[in-house]
Length: 212
Image (tube, rainbow, N blue to C red; front, side, top):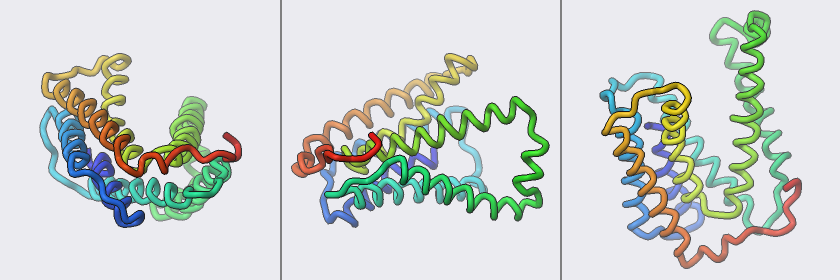
């Protein structure tokens, strides 16, 4: 649920950087969406906050900053989505390679102990959940607003729950179902509000982007 706080953080950052004003109703939509995520992910009870929760909160801040900055840098200029994605991945790899030493197990040691199945899972996560996800996010944020992108990203728990129910046969309670409906309601309402904003026409797709 904590990562979905990006839904609230991004509009605030967008207003700060672009000096724009979102309709108050948009925040109503974000509250509904966040409440839905809370019901969906915490239907079995709320857990006591811990260090992991703090790290996820920092990740939510990083996601909000990332979406807003990319949108800002993309204004009135062509950006190469593939090149930006490559830079992001190389930066992430460098940071994690250094940070892995703190755990006492370097990347080389972990890689040597991985099985073939583990390598297949790593490749899948790297290509589908990282490279593809980052590329699409950069491509999309230039064609809409950061607020709407984060609102849609906030539906991630919903799709995770759908996959869990269909494939893993996870149980879905009445509370969880109510949360899923609130997520759909909040995100769709926010999308409609954002589309009707006076400056929506100025965010039309920029022609001439590379590698698209």
